[in-house]
Image (cartoon, rainbow, N blue to C red; front, side, top):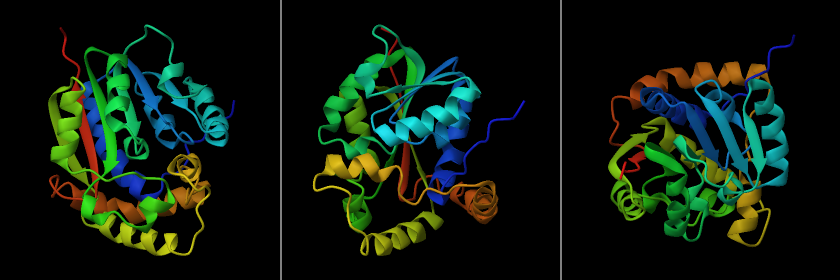
Length: 246
């Protein structure tokens, strides 16, 4: 029987996964829901940490994610959080690099929090440092970047408690941002609106193949150790918020 292949992570995602893996492992969930799973690179890793369900609205990304995650025992549905089975809740609900693509982020969080089991957690990642909003953000359909205070306020307004913020990506993430901004200057967006650009964002600069994965993993490894030295600084932000038990 062929062992399912785990797809490689792009460098920025590899830095993010190091934080997310530790956060989710500490939460020790039985059930996991990922919203906006893209092509499933993170989902293939989360699928081994609990009973896993994902939702992805983009047609092409959904097909790729389904092909990758189903052999690992997870499930992928085509759509957004409104397609999640009614009445179900999950120990951990995740959304990585999703919230910044949504015009009304407050409404999105208000829709996501009820999917968290009481006492469970919402785990998000977003680009941070609003003053770094640049050509890449425009290309991929971002409405904003966040700082810790603004995201904490959003999560609190949505009903979250015990909010935690962890920056990641120092110092390599700053270089990666600069490179992506330069590349974005020479690319044409896939659509005129942020929604159209968002649809194709998960497919841009995604690595493929075992060789690429091995190279990226080796190149990023030293920087993972460095980013742990500065959990309060970096161009990426992982947030954890608990849904109250009552």
